[in-house]
Amino acid sequence: MIFIFFKRFGIPDILFVFCYEFSKVPCRRLKELDARYRARYGMSMTENPSEHLTEALAHALVSMVAMSPRVTDAADMPEMKADALNVRIEYSGEHKGELGLIMERPLAVRFAARILGLGHPGDVYDDMVEDALKELLNVVCGHFLTLMYGYAPVLKISLPRVFTIGAAVCNVLRTNPNVCTFTVEGAPLLGQIRIR
Image (cartoon, rainbow, N blue to C red; front, side):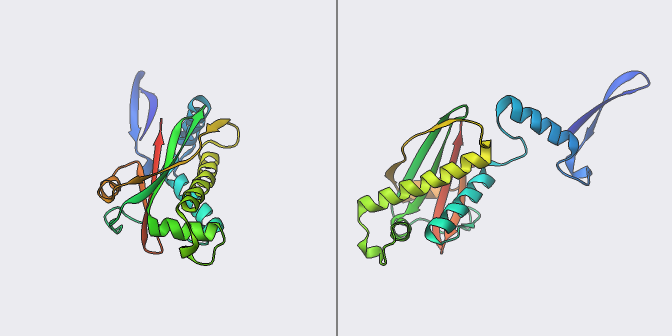
């Protein structure tokens, strides 16, 4: 919604105009407001962090493991049936936040096998899976931060960490507004964004 201030009969008045009433969205006024918000606070009012995570994840998966994530509605995503691996990374500085990827072990092993160039997922050990997931999230994070904040901000990125999370918790998390739901070759994958 945009507020337009004007005078009617010499008295200040406000006209409320909704964005859908314009033929071009975002309009010039919203772009100007967004530019001021970016300059003052370093974030956009018109961009959605979920869109940036989706783009960053797609870029990383296609280039690193030759797989494409499919955005899935939380209600349509298959439930996780076993404990999952949760890989997380934090960033701080001018902007602060945290990114995470949650997936069941078979998908993580397939990612690791492809990242490490191994022919068969059976050749992958636990520490290899963790290292591959950390590298994957590091690439996703770098791409996400560039899309979200541009090239100018200097941010400190933590070392990624991997831990196990229960299937029941994963299935509850998928309805969280900070979580993006995907499937990769039919397997569920959660992407989590927390901006502070």
